[in-house]
Image (cartoon, rainbow over all chains, first blue to last red; front, top):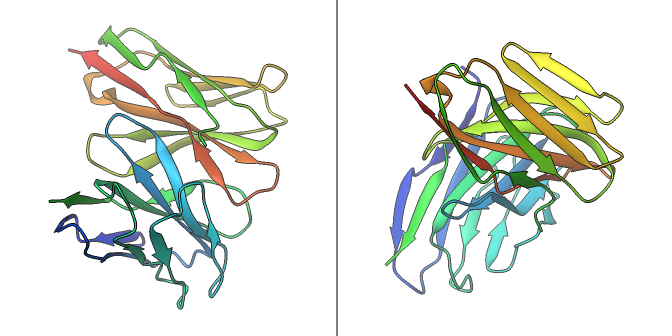
Length: 113
Length: 111
């Protein structure tokens, strides 16, 4: 079945460590997105990519990095520079065109110990 | 920045009642979308209404859009316990590509 796969579902990290969250889609979508969600709050945009080898900062990009070397993959690295990384991270993709619905993965919950 | 502001933040109703959630936004939009999120899960797209549309229906869902007031409402009719979830409005600005979400309304439907 087509969809978006995020891994791992749960991740624990010590302070000062970088961690990479995986996002893979087999929907043949051009655009991919990373959002952060804190408890009881909405989603905030971290990074987005419209095409391979291109990405833009969202509203809260500081302390995060991404790459888009393949159409199917858009990994997010949470670096040690991110001061408050404990959150629920959601990856999404959008089909052809610049507008339309987003398809979400099931999320990755990162906890910093 | 969060474009949309949902109201109320939380809503508790009995099964069979209707649930209405409102969303306000700040800038010009291409479209407005509503999503649902069950606890600890990803979001699921419910309905999209374009800026030149005023009302749209999908099953038990009815969405309205008033671009002059920069507001939208989502009505869920004949609610069920399974409708218990958080509901988010999201807007695409006229520049495209970025979809910005509000803080959401938490709906609890009591059986």
